[in-house]
Image (cartoon, helix red, strand yellow):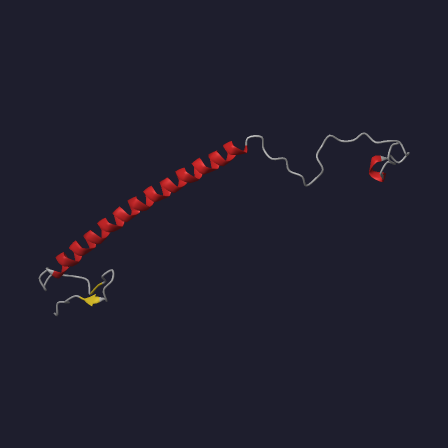
Length: 105
């Protein structure tokens, strides 16, 4: 014995409606090869992380170079004779603002 047709299975004329081969809305079929997708994401994230770390190392090396240059500049500026024109203020990276000697007229 057949079950009675649901409203969605009947046409307006009462005849059976051909069933769709599509999945109902809201269902998701898992990819056939989900491992390769996970592998691709893992590889891409790993490559991005390595690139970020390399950039950080490069920036850290540049920062160290700038700090070395700053120390040299401060030392050189401090060793200048008082009659040499210098700026009135020298700011150290972690030090308080220092006032350089300003020649008097």
